[in-house]
Image: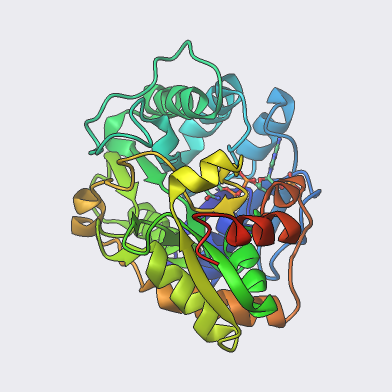
Length: 332
Ligand SMILES: NC(=O)c1ccc[n+]([C@@H]2O[C@H](COP(=O)([O-])OP(=O)(O)OC[C@H]3O[C@@H](n4cnc5c(N)ncnc54)[C@H](OP(=O)(O)O)[C@@H]3O)[C@@H](O)[C@H]2O)c1
């Protein structure tokens, strides 16, 4: 059956991967965005508009119907705008696949998490509480049987404008002693953007009810920080030598976890997010090595579809890195 889907977003990273996979399957794909971030993927039916404006949402609804909506553009959106969108689209869409985040859990990143772990309360502010409130807003309009909520952890892969994996790849390519954070055995659970996209489309096109929430992360314990850096060093020509430095030493030097050394978390725990429900529903997570290789190929094949201020937050200054490596405890 030729599915008709509406992708909210659709011009960069996750939304773009969803669109590409939908078109590859021969589906009819409508996209909705303001036309500010990147170009349309050839083959889509683009509708321009702002999710924050009710008139635009009504105009969008008049372009329906669709079998499913895939909402990949709500990173910074007010939950009230998500609610207004769900309200407008409910009569013209069979189901709603909402891309939330593990940040919706109150216990992220310190605690082990399953889909039944506690979410943030609706009244909170910030990214996690907004995501939790937006999930509820969609569920209230579409009902549990027609709402699927995806909660990805960190998403990597070709097209990543945030600059996490691109930073590590460029750093490894620069070569020399390379500050490696924490310990090589520390587990991480990044998921490839193409695997999130395929899973979203699987839920969009499923024959039966799709209700429920799904943690969308790599299996617990499969990937490690050591594996990530090893893969980055390998694909960039073996120029860099990781030097592992304990988290306490990095914190003493004022290194910002997560951004200055991407994917490094200084706290105990974390990266224990169960993804059994998603795997049972068909999530396939490719090995991180493949994500690293394809992202390097993408960077060398033309780079970023759109520049973004978040990229500037990532990476450590080379002089600071060298000073830490040369310091006592710096493994240099
Ligand atoms: N990156 C990660 O590691 C990660 C992890 C977990 C969850 N997520 C979630 O994954 C989803 C996708 O993230 P992303 O980084 O790929 O995309 P994003 O930054 O959330 O969305 C970008 C897309 O949405 C459109 N858009 C933004 N504001 C809009 C508005 N007011 N009205 C209409 N369209 C609008 C943009 O086009 P225009 O600017 O042209 O309108 C663009 O196509 C988000 O919900 C995010 O929270 C991401």
